[in-house]
Image (cartoon, rainbow, N blue to C red):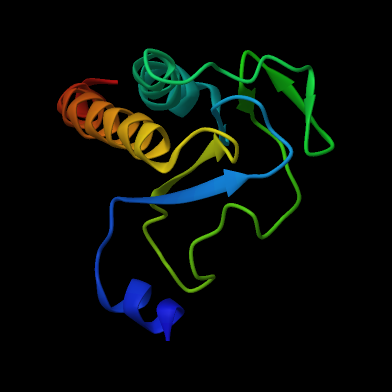
Length: 128
């Protein structure tokens, strides 16, 4: 049902929100240096004002740098296979231990930042 919904719309991006019971800080998963620099890093900076960033070199078995995982197994970040214009895909992860209101504040700060940064990003993209 979710795949059909995604196919019926022309999403420019997919952002998944998760809580990680093994993490002590906020982190994100994304593929690609451009999206990391222009979307995820600013989002993590915004969230970091509320919750600490997970600075471990390995998170959930994947190499991480400064709270960012760039490579993970297939299927973690993936739009439906039939999707022609591939949307950007980001996963934001909060630690499980903090109170819910802090996790929610951090996620809202990160999401608002992604929306602002994405508008700027697509404004410049035609000139790349």
